[in-house]
Length: 415
Image (cartoon, rainbow, N blue to C red; front, side):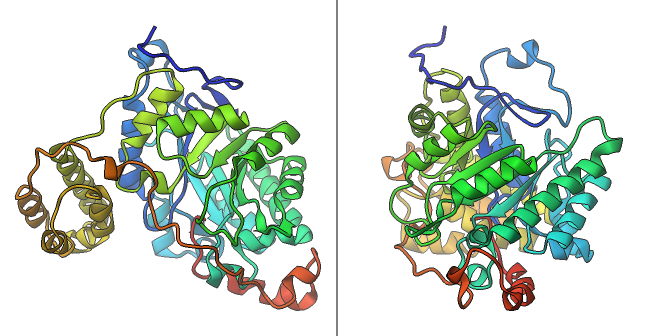
C-alpha cells in the first residue's frame, strides 16, 4: 500500500471512451498555441512517471487503444482549413511519433464540412479520438455563432454532432475499432440561457462517447469559480462518461472534483501552463499515491531547455521556436524570485545557447515557491456575451443566420 492513500468515491481510475481504455482519469485540454506536439509529449511523459511502480510490467498497452496516463488532446484545428488542405493545419495534425492515442479537437459550424473533416481524419489515419469544440468563449467567434454560442441553436447542434458521428462510424469500417467522438462545452451562454443539459442529451442520442463540461458560462469566460454542481447534475443524467473541467490546479483539486461530482475524469487546461509536471501529480493522486514536492528552479530550467529543444526540432527554425517558447518561459518562471530586467531579457532570447546562458545566470537553488501553486492563467471578469443579432430570439436558426455561420470559423480557440 502507498503512504497516505487517498480514496476516490464512485469511479475507479480507469474508464472508457468508446474503444479507448483510459487507465488514469486525466485529460489535457486542447489550447490554441499551447498543446502542440512537444508540450503534449512533456505532459504525457510526466503523467506516465506518476503511474504506480511496475505499472508497465503489469500492463502491456495496446497502441492506439490504451492511454496509461490519460488523454492528451492537440491544439484545435479548424475543419474548413483542414478540408481545404491548409499546410499549417496538416503540420499541427502531425503527431508525436511516441503518442499513444492521437486525440484531435475539431472546430467548425458547418455540419457537411465537419463531417468531411472527420472522415478525412479517419481515412488518413490521423486520429484515434475526435473531440468537438463547443466551449470557445472568444467574442470574435461567438459573435458569429460559433463556440459556446452554438449549442443554443438545437437544430444546428444536432445536425453537426450527428453528421460527425455518422462520418466517423462509416469511415471506421475498415479499421479494427471505430474512432470515438466526444464533445467539450460550457454550461451555456449566461444564467438565463443554459444549454448543457439539452446538448448533452442530444450528443448521447447521436452516439457521442463522452461529454466534457467546463463548469462556467460563456459570460463567465474564465472568471469566478467553476460551478462543479453542474458537472454532478450532468453525471446523474447521462449513461456515457462525463468529464469535469474547471479549477483543477493540483492533485487535491482533482480528487475533490471527482468526489464532489462523481465525474469519470478531470480535464486540465490553464492549470498546466508552465507546469507540465501537474500530470504526474494528478496521476499519482488518482492512483492513491502521495504528493511530491514541486521542482526547484534548477529542475525547472532543465525542463525549459528540454521543451525548447523539442520545439526547435519540430519547427526546424531556432528563432521561430524560441519565439514560440517565450510565453512558456514566462509561465515556467512564475513565482520564482527573478527581477524584472532578467525576465525581460529571457523574453527576448532567440537561440538555445542564449536561453541556456540566461537561465544559468539565475539563482537556481530556489525551491518551488508557494506563489507558483494554485490557479494559472488570467481569470479576468465576466464579459458581456457577443452574439449574432437576434441569436437568443429562438433556439433554431433563421435563414439569415445560416448564411452568416461560415464566418464563425475564423479565430477560434479551445475554450
